[in-house]
Image (cartoon, rainbow, N blue to C red; front, side, top):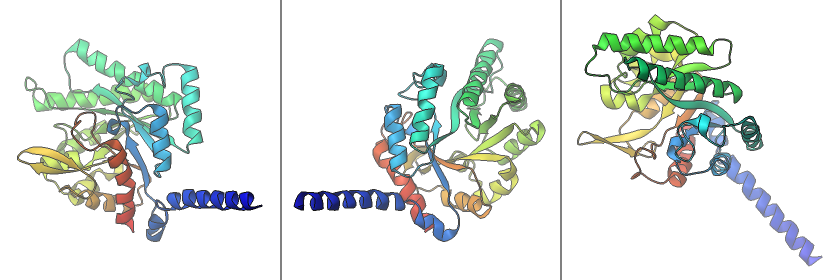
Length: 307
């Protein structure tokens, strides 16, 4: 009888601990009447396998995953997690088991190149990712420009980006996938982004608003940027940083100089329904904190803010 009593008490305490752990991420949001949906980019955990990624996400209150490589394989079509019908079936079952969904695939498709062979290669990469996203019931594929080539005029580069977006959106026609251009590289100024989005004017094309990428270059406040771009924003990248002697030093959320919560609050007041995806750039910056720390901090920082 004593053994049974002890076991029952232990089971009760274990169950209570699990429930309490889960509650840490939810009631604070409920107080505001707004429940932000959280995801993270696998850019932040470049050496984790898929089981560890999904287990960690479920344990820390995430509801989505943005896939930007798995175990340093950036070409997701080649990853063992996705490279066959049977692999994709197992992957989708794992996501369902953990209460997760794919919220975006991060391609390396770069739209600013003019040279024919390289341009075709980049666009074909985007198309392969669109096909994979459709198979995974993932709504978005990320594409981007980086630094504009010096041998091209700015106008010519902008035209190439627009043409690339339209070609990829045509490939996505009839699917459940949209092509999202990230505010990235030299394409971070509000006027340029507005011009491109107005001229492509396509429901299959939207934006990933990376608040930090924009502000750290342009200094344009989210309060200025958001009203102009909000109808195009489908997905949001969240990160914080300190500008130190011309270089960026990434910090945990709320510990840097980026007006990140100004942008988040603008979205929340408009009842933004998409995901806030934490982009901890560990793959590109191995010196920053380990993913176990950074990816655990993000939901806590969001909880504290919304409380």
